[in-house]
Length: 295
Image (tube, rainbow, N blue to C red; front, side, top):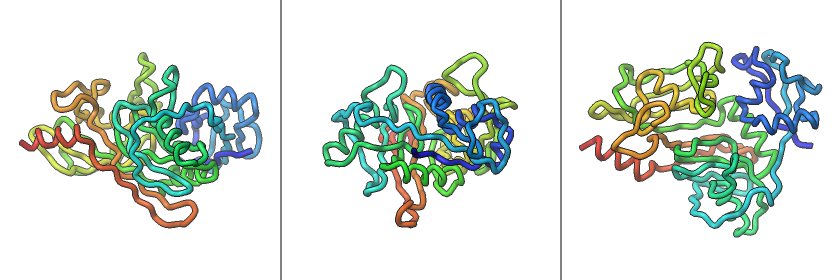
């Protein structure tokens, strides 16, 4: 039985087990399955979802590995940024989900990856290390085995694995670089949104200005945490919404989706111990928006 193993950080201390699972992207349905199978352990014992965590606690979560048949292989365009026997990084286009969710069972990046692996005679077993919003483009990293997944997740949680984004924002930053630390929680009325709220989960976004235009800027961002909609919400909270983000900002004539792209992922290879840096070039629609702003 394979488990993902986490050490509770100082920032995560005082969270309930349920909230801890949520910030580590364990869905409510998975929580139900794990609870029934005693697949959530706190310091070696079955955990109560309401239990309060302390820094240094060890949380083990049994891996729910989808069967090969659970993800339909589809012949869809796919751009491989990096691949070896242990992991693969893909360049996700905008308007595509990373993984089947809800009623969407086809057309996702995972459907395309399943087909790619099958066509190349490789086992169709993969685990996304992080996800991107449907309309966010760029680098997504997948592990090809459970042990590589566990190692990369540890690196993600300890910030050894880093993710860098670029975004076009509406407005000019008064400080060329800085850190946004607003906590993020559920929106009080809208289930598909998040909100800045005092009782939310800790969230940390570092930013620096790359270029400025007429009432717009290109910014580079690095995450310490991975809350849902974190970059979009944090930039909106400082009155610099991402261009085209009609959920936390407004529509833009320059681009038809939020101008947010995961440009780089860097990590220590779990098998070779080499530092690997994978880069994803900006998409054509963001480059066009930059050209228009420059002119």
